[in-house]
Length: 479
Ligand code: AMP
Ligand code: MG
Image (cartoon, rainbow, N blue to C red; front, top):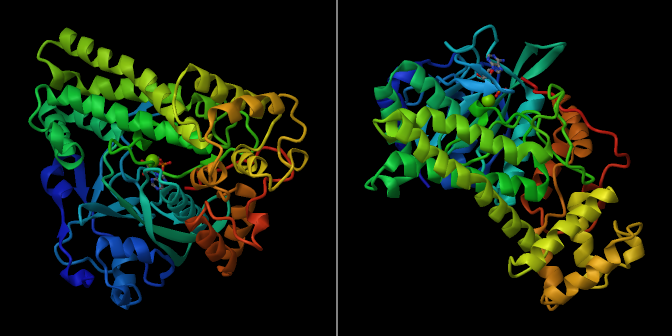
């Protein structure tokens, strides 16, 4: 591994897309300390282990020192927030330092930028730690996501409803280009839009570069990535909470962990966000919102696909029509794997649907159901001691399911596919409260457990349990 001083920091976005970003050197936090360090991600990026413990590292990632060759910027973007268009969003509290090994290195919570509007540009510590824990868990269960390199305690207060300790996250992403970035570019002019599309293709969809009608293919490729991503969210009960167009990355990574959470007992209407009164971003609505967001994305590409607007719309609409069937296919693929089913035929689709119906009608814990299924089939627990104990439909379903699976090794297979530990709110909330009071023990432990979420560990039973009550847990944007 190289010392960061020898690592090339590139500024391709700052250089090629200066019309839609603003130079913005960070002011920094002089009393900051790093409280979570992601050694394995640092290694992937090429950092030396010693460097992570140096004062230079702290100064760079607390925004007190600008790396040589870095051009810090705030990125502009627009967005549909809960269906309403806001042309002027942008990085109001984040600064992009540049790219290391082709990955964006961003400081989130760094203070005011030209896009801050009335905000202070800062973050409280608790949501920073929450994003760190949840994004790294998503990575552990192989769901594309932005990563978290450092969680930093600024040792300065932020004023929200109350005074809270401040935090800063080093976020690492394939890029921070959002559907909203395209919506912003098009408010400038079509040349900037084209530059952004070419840049995005070059960075994320290189094999499309030389294809006929690459912009249409680009739309199809982003739709595919997003459809796959949302199917993966559904497969682990993840509810993003704010699927606004500015929170959808064109790379297909999960981005912006705000009021997100994982469903406990299966209820498709589950929504955790305090601001989502109509359930727009509930669990069951995520695929429909995917489609809606892709339609907004398609609108931005109209000027690029064909000179004739009507032809452009027709071509983009044709691709958009495939998004939901594509999503459906991915969804069944995910659930077939979760249930150890080898093929996706009508019989197995029926099995998947009836399994979900059982979870729904009997309010069964989503995550535990798959683990208990593995235990029932290898007879390590009796049906009466499982989450299915009160279910009337389960026994019949189980018999049909057993006919379709290859019984040898099935429990092992299920356990490799279905996590036993997830970041359940009732667990991480207490750990976060302790952490902001200076006790990092629990949050460190949870971070460790969630690195290997498929491996059941003796002595850590409480971390796999569902909450004792089905009362909904409310999450806040936590900005
Ligand atoms: P988010 O909820 O993180 O998706 O943010 C939505 C928009 O509000 C983005 O443009 C953010 O940059 C902006 N924003 C969120 N929090 C702040 C803050 N504390 N100060 C300034 N802008 C913010
Ligand atoms: Mg956002």
